[in-house]
Image (cartoon, rainbow, N blue to C red; front, top):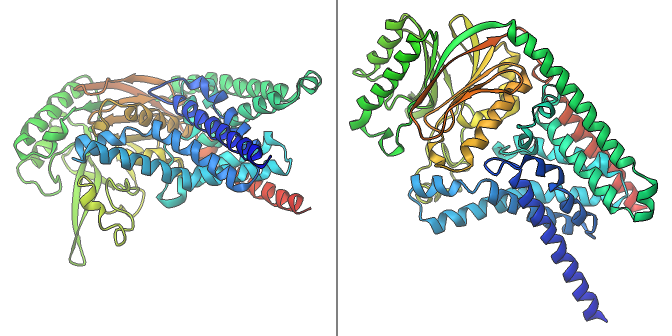
Length: 519
């Protein structure tokens, strides 16, 4: 009898882990480059079922760990390309490191999420409120804790659904995540009822359909409203340059003139087409612009010759207290050939641009030879070009909603992000990175310009429409026009009120569950 009971427990746990893994796969498939965004509305149903059958907090944590590990492996598999092709790490080690990172993300975020949902569910509290609130709370934590890694939050999967994503101008990306989890919870609750009660109670489907209708209505009205605002906005003519410089040549001194020649020719074409502001990508100059005597004047003369503004990325060094510091920076050059502004990247890529806890992780430099040793910028600054204020984000920074929001709140009239996605090769990463940038335009209701060494160069209007984009691994340029307006979103002004409300709701639900479970 005991053996039979043990067999049943093992089978049940195996089924729960299988369902959690299935949810992890479906979750990953909702994002580029799989592009099955509609799958997101069913992806969490198996996970919620398995969590509803868990008998302890530990079971919930293990189910969450399984979900988080599987989804992370399939979403960020591209780091193996960065480590092996460009970092020189053997493939076997890079795959091991991918699995280790996926397990770490599962332990830090998804295991606690699973445990929390299982605990609240065990007290019989309403899933339609609890599941979305808990999910959003942990997404918010994922943005801030342990330097933050908010890559592929659930709401980003819905970027192709333009009417749905418009709610982000109130809630940020977190509101879209709430919406998707709520629909999953409605489907889960409906199908977890018995056939008899399902005939009598269709309220979960009614709630879900009502939420969809309200969200779609809001999205439709906002798109119509902003199309009119955009049409009447102030035009700004710009050029985006994608140099497509091979990573093997990028820092080779023998290719410096060739690299600069590519950018110069593309830039002159955009200037001749009427662009007033030209934007090059992250670390576009293959030298220290601040001090290079031979090549620096070529860049300055380019702006002077065409009486235009030039924005580009370049590494910077400085001495402080007898120690050399390196920064990843963006410069603005005026039509007079002067440096009109500089921004130093604040949020660095862990293990890419710096090694966190280096005193304890001293071995990482040897394990990951591509890891940089950069310092963080001290404060966000607005840059000026052509009489307009804009906010700059360098590469990884664009995936942090609050960091970008503060630039708009402080007066940025449009957003610029520069990057180099060549590290990721022809994988899903450049496409994932691109749509995350696009959602910042909707959240803040300002246009966004993005230029990449290679990756995807393009720009978005205030409704998230991709006006134009390039292919990856091509030398290309875009000459276009954005329309700016003085209107700002609720999210820009007030920030993460919605997600903090979800955090408050989670704490209250945990307190109620604790009291009920004790009784």
